[in-house]
Image (cartoon, rainbow, N blue to C red):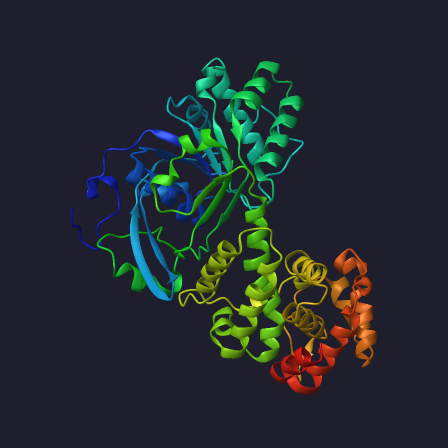
Length: 486
């Protein structure tokens, strides 16, 4: 049904009065979940006749549930990105949220979700800090403060209402960005069971009938496009206060077996949702390739003169550097199929080139030392161990990182964003112009790397050489000279 641009967005105006039964309770109503989970379940509804409605729970006192309910759970998702060099722009009305619940305003409505006959799944994204144990939370609170305590209350209510029958057990799939997210959540829930002295039968139902699944999620979601809202509104024939913008790329890796694949038939969609026995290789792949490429490019590219990720990969020199670091070095030490790794890397580079997302290098320079330790250093060390030589591009990136922490370049301040201890340590390290002394002091600092890197064969000399070349000849000529001499 066509409506005028000032027409309110609701189900009546769009002829969408019929709602699917609640099969999903979702903790969190923010941009990421609405651009990721709702989109994924809508594809299941469209392609697999899944018929799943989502009830969204506001996990903190202040949130967006009222705005969501004001639009009957409807909103528009705009997807923009690059796929195989082609610019993609689409929009879709998301229609599967059937109810928004604020447990702080109506606790009974929250408890009633536990009694939904067709409820099968719990989804969450309450930020990395959301999966936390709060000792002061109790069963009697309406509601408890933490997400795990709220979920424990909901699960206990369902157990009691349905007398602990197995076919009313739930599948719990947290999406918070911590490793082993569901294992951590389950551990906290069981701690509340002990604290609150809940029945052994409930704990048995929880551990043997309900299932918990670790996940990895990946999609960049800028959210509400405030700066371009007129451009977005011009594409709609209704007024939408909850527009969400996101990139086209989506990856959801969920640990599970054939039973979960049967419950969630994502194989009937074109989404990249992988249900696997072990998600850790995919996590490592993401950390090493996507995050590793980001972290290794930042100091190098800033010293060269770029400002954004897109500029970095589009530039002939810096783009070639990033490609070589990924395809010739990082991907050669990951324990996965090389063709699959290279295909994933190509998708990553498309994401880096996305013209709709301006990703400033300075914004991702935060805590570069700890990021390098986790994201890049393992690839460097594993390459050295496997091939008995240092990877030229990752080693040069390491030298750029150390040079970056000197704090200035061409008489201009560099955007260092790190702890005071690390910044002060580098002031001491850079109190000399002796590059070998700088390299030695930086590499032997075990508080940076959790190990003494001066023990890595030839690494001190290589970093010292790179530092000398960067200072004398700049990044471009310096890299060329470094590779010839390494």
